[in-house]
Length: 424
Image (cartoon, rainbow, N blue to C red; front, side):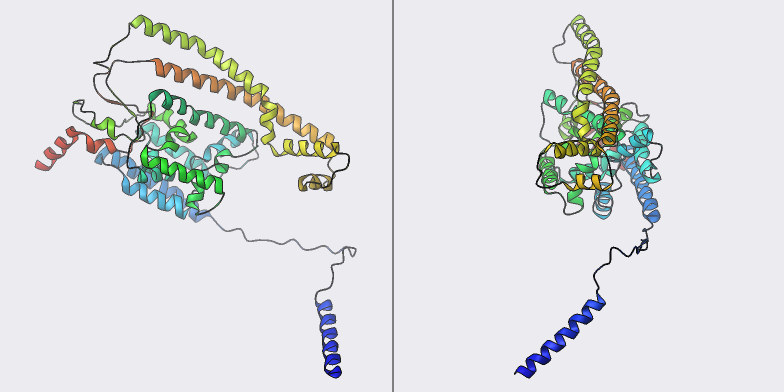
């Protein structure tokens, strides 16, 4: 037994010594320089070309469907969700491209990919020509909400007006954080990215699922009350060259199109409602127009005063606060990794303070403009809410219309047109 044990110990010693020779401890004092490792970067050119080609193809198909065929675009929505959503996992995204374009305007060193620029510009061009056909079924986020919608629950006009301000505020903040090189808000808080990627941040995934559940009972809550790119497209859609029409024939005020619209973008007639005196309407309109400069100045001042707090979204400002907090402690137990890295780079607090002040100065400058824009958006919303133009038939609000085409099949006048076409 002793002989077996001694033999085993001998073999273990030899194996241990051999292992020591195979995997020696690293020698940090020898001055040996590890070679730089080169990694092959995958070529995305083919995918980029395919993405832009699919975008153009779906935009053309959506335009043809809503303008020529005058049909809902269920199949286009389904293709968009499958390709741009689940296959491409929600990236590249026209909504997120706002950030890249804004950053490119202020940072000459930033190289914006050509496909991102294409995803930003192409839907705008089509919106200026034919309305929001991108929102109709090409955008995977809008298409996903459209596919699950089965009921059009109405939201009161005052509540919808207040919620309708959120996309504009989101758009302004998105641009502000992008031009200050702080963060890409749209990418960080995309509620549908977790659904398309079948995982991710739990809070965002829950938020996205909640939006989809809401979409079952009311039309497109994200598009109407959150999407910053939709707000941008509404500007061009309101001035579109070729506008969406409910019917080519005379409206008979049956109210069917109004009930079918998932985003409440069809204005009912005011012909039979009680009209106020013209003088009262003009007086209220002038009051809101005089209020606009005051709201713009107030918004600019508030955002300028908030520059210090808003700037904490920037990594250098957060690092400065962490270093100051760490050095203020008499006997810190642990050192944060960011602070440790800062000291390893031989950084000084004075140098970091200069960087921090530069960031805060950017926030004061850009924040002032952002606040003025917020005030203007609020004033314009008040003006739009107060204007009551006389209408005798149902009309489409082209800025709000997402060109989904649902109203076409509900209009009895369109059915008459279809019968006459078949007879011919």
